[in-house]
Image (cartoon, rainbow, N blue to C red):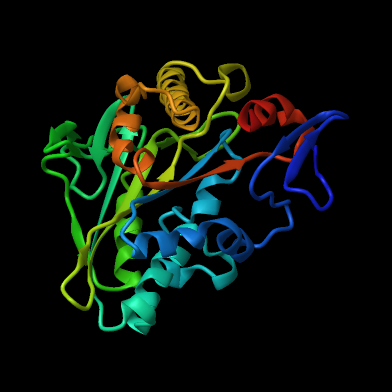
Length: 306
């Protein structure tokens, strides 16, 4: 596989070309990925629009690295290695503090939440586990139920932590990451076994009294996988089935939105129900497809690009 020279395309073999808005090769730096495709969403959020960044791809392809959701405080990560989440959060606070244009005199109040969808159960990663970690190292977390309140999706009991700086927001991400479900497979020793959604909710008070309340969702999807490649069995196999089910439902929703279908199947999975407000309507969404450069991963790469 290769990147087509001068074109935002990925070419597999001799004649399979896939065109995207942006394509980054293995030499691309983290800041290039952020500035090339994710930075524009900051402007959308500061104008009041909900925005979402999703990282999709096979297990071990670099989704967590690209998103910057590894759970390490940003102060401990070299600037060059910072992913999309810390860069986005830092720019939001900096833009409001700078007070340029419409943001002059604006006041920002922000809070953060962090959840995972594990086997179609929704867990709040910021609440203490209800049971200590078992032999497999996974703590048992309380389950949240999806509700609709005044036409919007709600999670009663969800922990929302006020954050007054980028450092506080990344501390929330770090705290929640320690509770996220991971497990070893033949393809990744610390494979994410859940879909994680880190949300920064904003209240932006502009001069003249106008108040904007957008949300920015950062979604680190569990890796798509085939049991034959991962060697999964037992609980790992069951996790893989649910992972792929959620990814299929998400793909169907995105296809329905792109093709402007009258019915969008948000209710086919917990993941798509949670993201309903941030995928449809006037929300802005960026999907990043992470692929491996290895020939051994050709089939998984093809499935991701499709």
